[in-house]
Length: 359
Image (spheres, rainbow, N blue to C red):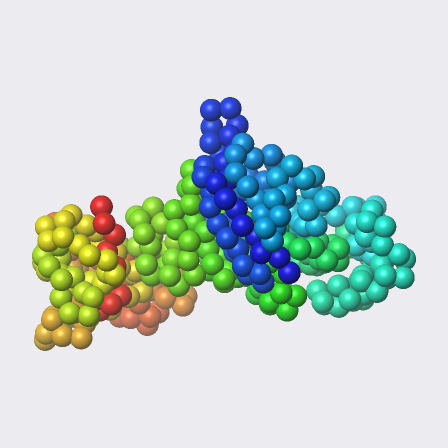
């Protein structure tokens, strides 16, 4: 397989920088997701890797070979598009054979490769059907099979599940992940769906305005975001503004906030008096009807409040808790939690489950 390195990639359309100074190395067998809102530059980056766009600056290296300037057909890539892009007048087998025929592969080898890849995507008995005779999920698998049958060095996927319904999209996430691991191909996956990126990725690249804001494993991106922008884009977040009082034990810091002194984790050095924000996720907060006996104990933090909103979501119950000085906390509890609107509650969370974002 192939290692992919992108160095100083930039792409401008007139005065607009769609991609600006993109730097990333993607390891052999690794699946990387480019995640961000519409217009952040993720698809433009993918199109530069594929050769459909010419970079304004920078290098794109496949195993230390710079492919900038090479046409797509000479890069040995497999591409899966959002709209599948299957030929409607061709059967599944004919769709899969097309790219191989263009590469001059022998008929015997074409037949063997098609049989193997159809079994890989678990559609071995559908070779004679036309795309219109397939479900959305089956068409997506055939699109994947067509990209893989040419045995590419790198697989590129551009929002491949966006046209599927919610339940099928969830099933296909796991299928794409397991398929990529079985085949072991280096993969770049573009999506704006945070849950999708969390499920399938070895690492996530979070992009805004053409730039990389954070790169990391899904759990790192979620639990240790580097900015409010990243935290807000990946799941729900609570922010509490404060000022550093000092460092405690085990990498913890004490913050002075509008709801009292709070403790949280951070891995860097922070000067006393610095203005920062504490972030805590809704599922990390535990609701109770009585004040904790020792707020400096295992829970670490306790904030008094009143339930202002309650909504049932099936697997969880969501709350909005009105606290002092206008602070509103979002909390996710088990679906049988018995708190109602107007109830006085305490919100407790462990210092290890809170994180500092320097302002």
